[in-house]
Every structure is written in structure tokens, then in C-alpha cells.
Image 1 (cartoon, helix red, strand yellow):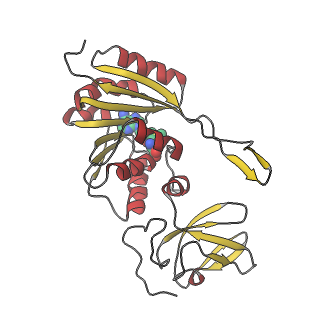
Image 2: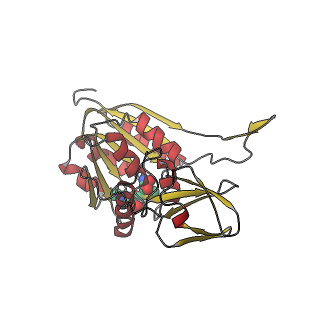
Length: 277
Ligand SMILES: C[S@@+](CC[C@H](N)C(=O)[O-])C[C@H]1O[C@@H](n2cnc3c(N)ncnc32)[C@H](O)[C@@H]1O
């Protein structure tokens, strides 16, 4: 067992330090099933493959294998951003890693960006946005429901080892909150993004980008109509992202039979200068 104190912020995959008491780690079994847990000195992890002593892991290198009391083997790794999303506590449905990556890319969200997001939901997309803007950027998240805001706050704090200094979570309707805000990126994952378009055009600086995540076709149609109705929006586009895994085993190389196909459509638009007409 190591006497290391738990890290203040989760160490990223590949960090040179040995696995420490108090760290969140991912167990992966022989069938590829993943379990997120916290290393606790003196305690055991119990699953269908038997009990695993955390003391057998603490002080070892990331990527080590450990055996349960029943002899089954588990691989121990630090979780990636994708693992944090897929294994985190959920209130609202989260934005999947494939769409998080596309939102960051399509909305051109990089270091220093001033991003407004709604709704925060479970905080999964929030975490991706915070990583993308870096310490010199800022993310302001709106969330209507207190229970969802509590989960977002908890998940983001767990992910970053406390509330990030460049993150503000506001409890309330984004359409009202935007009146007092100026930003260069606006990301919407809520039922009726078209209701936010009028407030968004005043909050977004000319040249800024709006990106909306909407699961259904009627949502896309209503949003695109609202954008088309105001000449201060331009270059609207809608895409979806399908990611298909492949089975690779010797000569048996083929697409997986199953995939998460449709999740949502991503619509982007640019805020034009006021005189554009
Ligand atoms: C699908 S969830 C968002 C999930 C989130 N993007 C994630 O990855 O964890 C949608 C959230 O939007 C919130 N919401 C809906 N309308 C809103 C509004 N007008 N202002 C702020 N939040 C809103 C809902 O309460 C809900 O929690």
C-alpha cells in the first residue's frame, strides 16, 4: 500500500505517478466491460468476478493487471474523458463522446473561447467544453432544473477535482439569462432551441457561432426556420455523426453488428454583423 495522498484533481491517463489511494480508476474485464471505482486503502472492490483488494493496486503503475480472489483478471487504467462521460452519474441524457468531439470541432471551441451552454443536464458536455476552452477561456452553463444542476455540479467537480475557476453554473432559463451576457460561442442542448434564438442573437458577438444538439427532425426544422427568419444569422448547416466500430480479429475483419447510430443532429450558424441583410 502507498501512503500517497489522493490527487486534488484526477490525474490524466499516462500520468507518471503510481496509482494512489483515493484515485478514480477504471477496471476493464476480459469481455471489455468497464467499471469506474475509487481506490480505497484497506477496502475491497466486489463484482461478479470476485473481490479485488484495492491494496493490490495502490502504488502500482497504471495499466497493471490485478487478480480477484476468484482468479479473474482486471486491467486497471485511469479513465479517459469518454469513460468519465459514459460512467458518470446521470440525471438528464448526456451528450455522447462522438457528439462532444463534433460540437467542439464544428463550433470551433478552443483555448480562450467564451462559451455559454444550456442546459447543463448531467454536465457531460460541460466537461468537454471546459477542457476545450482551457484555463484562459470561460464556460457559463444554464440549467432550469435544480436536480439536474446538482448532478452537473457534482460530476464537473469530480471530473476536475473541484469547481473550475472558469466555470459558472446559473440556475434558470437561458433565454432570460442571455440578456445580460456577451459571448463568442453558444451551445444548446435543450428541447426548444428555437425559443433561445432571439436572445442568442443579442448575446453572441458578430462572427460568433451557435451550435444546437437536437435529437429529432421537427426540432431541426423549427430551429432552422427561426434562424432563417433573422438576417443576422448566416451559414446555417445541419449534420449528424455516425460512428461505426469494427471487429478486428485475425482475418475476421468487419463492421460491428451493433452501433449507437443516431443520437442527434448538430446545427450550426454564424452570427453576422447587424447590417447584414
Ligand atoms: C438533455 S439535457 C442536457 C444534457 C447535457 N448536455 C449533458 O451532456 O449532460 C437538457 C437539459 O436542458 C435543461 N433545459 C431545458 N430548457 C432549458 C432552458 N430554457 N434553460 C436552461 N436549461 C434548460 C433541462 O432541464 C435538461 O437538464
